[in-house]
Length: 556
Image (cartoon, rainbow, N blue to C red):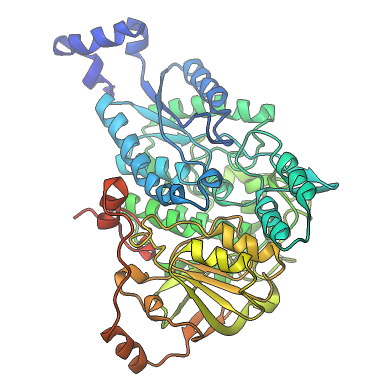
């Protein structure tokens, strides 16, 4: 049977290529086996990636055990927490496209027979998956695992509470010693931050969509089971290569629907909307925002992990993990159990015998947190092409809200006003020019939302932006407003004091401004001057698609 890697290892004309392999110490025997690219995002700047060297070595061991030759290649990764609140966050979403392109580049240039992707955090997971699906070669995802929760004053805590503690300190609810307590004890070790934030959302959805093995989303980074999982991932890729099961055989229209159902049940990050749209685009699957609401309308929300509630990823793991959630959803016919997954088994085979072990972390479909899913898409005259909210993290009293707009043209101005006590009960904070094009890069607004929560305003103040939110954000945090201000969207025409009406159950968001008044304002409207005019971000701003299309790079 011919292999992709034959293009660099077989035949007289490939002797120069073989000589370069021999220069690295590869043997003739190794070159006769399938060459497996192990794409590792290990670095010393991301807590979720600091342990990926060990995961990578375990994957390589699994590949060797199953008769393949593993070859590690690197990938970049931004720590969103460290990049938060300054220019660094502009690079976070943009890095997803670089990662996808680098996976494509390394796999095509060296003709790997299969890939094991070793990511963990935020944009790295979808970026790697996008690249693999674009290539359509056998692929398994093996993430690094979630962080354990911290402990502050005897209460389990996570990064969302750490950011909120800053707001509490600014409001003098806690003192310097209290803030230091959070600093030292919130993040106890390696792994992706312990709540259902973007990293863990995407790792769980990799498992739900079938490209990650059972346990990929929830086995803690520090558990021996994570190393075992990595070895099994290495063995699994060899099975996929042998059977020629490619990435698009696993990720397709039906499996994306499975992932959407799990997204709603788990209460995943609002960023999952962007990333599932982007993955679907690479897979050649038509996916629109309407489908998110369609799935939300019939999928119960079964989990309230941080920031929506007090449970964390290790609780979800102990309760049965993603497979228990899938098994529960299958009772309502929300899961296609016939689909193939990365371990060579079907979804149905994987969930056989799986059940909820702890109803405190996973509720049954008979007793959900809500009959509808954790995410909601809204439309209206300031979001004609949609916007997104993590419904499960919104207080009941804020599901509908009407209040005056407090308008800011960047995150920094908004956070300054919040810290200075200029935002009061009832306000609707509007942060614009933070979209994919206008940011550029669509920064996360975790600092403003955390400040509001820490100052105990999350149940009285809403926040709307054409940027996005961290999975750690809670409250009426409405992001991805499209069209964005930089593309002429009506959010750019809002004025201080305009009344904003938010109706999350009704999927509506409107300003009490007439079409005629918007048209009048547009006549004299002068868009804000772009704040980045050179480098990679400038090129990105010229090529990026709207958030409603996943903020992917345009192909023409």
